[in-house]
Image 1 (cartoon, rainbow, N blue to C red):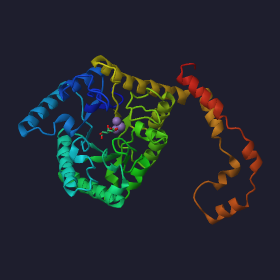
Image 2: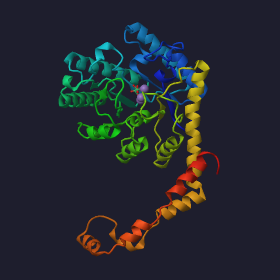
Image 3: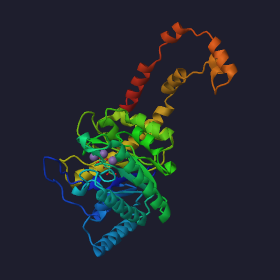
Image 4: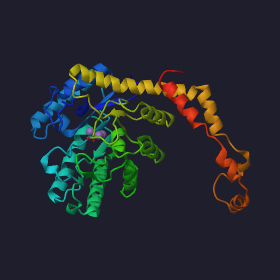
Length: 382
Ligand code: GCO
Ligand code: MN
Ligand code: MN
Ligand code: MN
């Protein structure tokens, strides 16, 4: 298991199955119990929001005890804490946002709470700090000056980058987009929107993205394409894996539970690009499950990833598939002269060249065959 850096949040395997229509179906596990559960199923690391570990109303001595117990559990199991984050959505104070709340006191409190949560994460050696703005958004745009909201969010991130550097924490920030839920509309709703926004920050090199399968899928987008753009920009700092059907509520299914083929293309992209950061499962067990079912859920996420990673190796080594790909991507000596950057000579030669448009349009591409071979490989039929 440890060849992949599989991680879970305290809030994922610790999910008690509460939903808008029903009460918890599972007992609350302590952070220490969760660390032991994750060690038992073979995970590499554990992540947390400040208040997953230390309740929002804990006093100093309670906090010290919780931190000491958690450190001991990590020591006993060998689990690491690669990522930390802030709960800026649970408390009613954040009902209209945190860094983008219209209330300047809420914005200041969000900054204070995040600095304290960064201190906590750093104590455990976390190097990635995630920002998921679950409440940064609106139901009615009558309530918001959207340009002010973006400005406030930018100011907060600039402030916190400086804070991280001043403390010597060495954090890299990872911004996580989501289109909606819990707000009607969340600001910067897609990974692409985040990538654009990052370039407007004071220290863009410190800030990347934490894309999540479910979030792009909820927006009806192709998640793998979003991850490709993040990789291309050198901004894939972290990733949240789960599964989701388009057009539904935020389902947080076990990785690969619904869309096997798309999950395969995602694993293939990560593998082929050499991504070696944490693989974080931001999902939870079905509400039908007890504690054993939670372990089945966690093992299932990791095993599915490994099975798909093995399928990627088969795909990359499959002679028929590779021959087809080689044919699809065959070089064309006639147009080789047009590749590369602009020169006046190249532009003039290209303008004068005669293309056989008819032949270009008639050429069959073989994607049907390629797709069927992919399906058969995934189904174990080849
Ligand atoms: C969600 C989000 C969260 C964040 C988490 C870490 O849909 O609720 O994905 O789980 O990932 O808050 O920032
Ligand atoms: Mn999510
Ligand atoms: Mn969710
Ligand atoms: Mn997430």
